[in-house]
Amino acid sequence: MKRVLLLYIFERTGHHLAAQALEKAIREREKNWNLLTVNFLGYANPHLNQVIQSGYLSLLHNTPEIWDYLYDNPKVARRISGVKEFINKLKSGKLEELLDSFSPKTVICTQAFPCGVVAAYKEKRKKNLPLIGVITDYVAHCYWLYDQVDYYAVPHETTKNDLIKKGIAARKIRVTGISIDPKFGKKQDRERIVKGINLSPNLPTVLIMGGGQGLGPIEEIVDSLDALPLPLQMVIVTGLNKSLRENLEEKKGEMTKPVHITGYVDNIEEFMEISDIIVTKSGGLTTAEALAKGLAIVIAGCLPGQEERNSRFLVDEGAAIKADGGKKVAVVVSELLSNPRRLSSLQAKARELSSPDASLEIAEMVMETVNSS
Image 1 (spheres, rainbow, N blue to C red):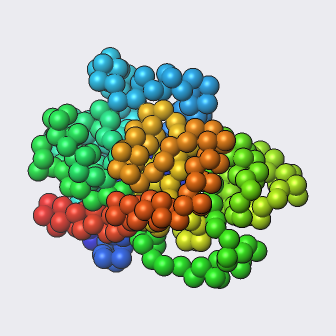
Image 2 (cartoon, rainbow, N blue to C red):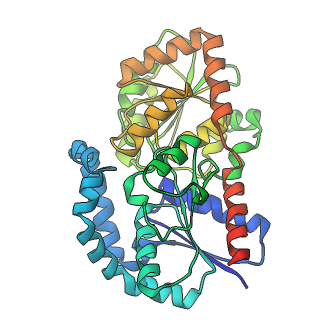
């Protein structure tokens, strides 16, 4: 039986969702393969996994300028190479145990850290183990760069060109789009969904999200949209942010617009199906899913680093509008709802840029790699 190992870090993140989507796509084609999807940090050291995740979120909340400096900085990457080697050594025992016991024909990583650890393992053990890096943002940072990576699946031609400039051979790179669940490319029963959450089938719908953690100025955005003298309704997804959900639920009775509030969900494709506009951070998975659903994207409160670069890419491609703060978001949403031609143009550009079958294409790439190794 052929075995494939998929590695990511952090539960309920874009990297996790990308790995799940790819596992699903591979299973659709190769039902007899043995696939194992693992949160590498959680597997190698659950305590360190929690410390790193908490530290990362704290850094983004309290000192985002530091993350902005660290992100895709070759000088920093060179300086911390010793730290990376130390961490790799800490994890190598667990990794070798996993690889030796599972014996995969190919390893797929949807985040750079486990990709680097597997690359170090390959170099140390002189292993000819195919390694595929699946990049989930529109710009590939320098921590993805390893000679031991055999292939990269990237979101767009510009991502490929950027990797080539950074020294990766063109033959190693395939433009696939971001690995999202194939369900985002399928039509849903709009009437059933709207009825199920007690909203109107006739009002324009704005979907408001802040990623899995419910980050960004969501309350400010909701207040500003609720104050607009326009007919609209809102679907608000607060993710894992319980305090945000509680605050919004308390305000719900005072809102003038129809609203549906929910926490983390596994059926976000249904909420996207009934929406006209999405107001969101510019995480790679969320924006790729929104593009597949043909939504007009308004980017608000994006984080430094990968999200800032995703935002720049989407705005440059004409598939999104950036608006910082609730009042600016309300201005943009008002303009779009008052100008159907502009709204339709943005939605058409989203569909043009989308890759709803990306995970299926990456699955084909994996199958080719496994069968030739």
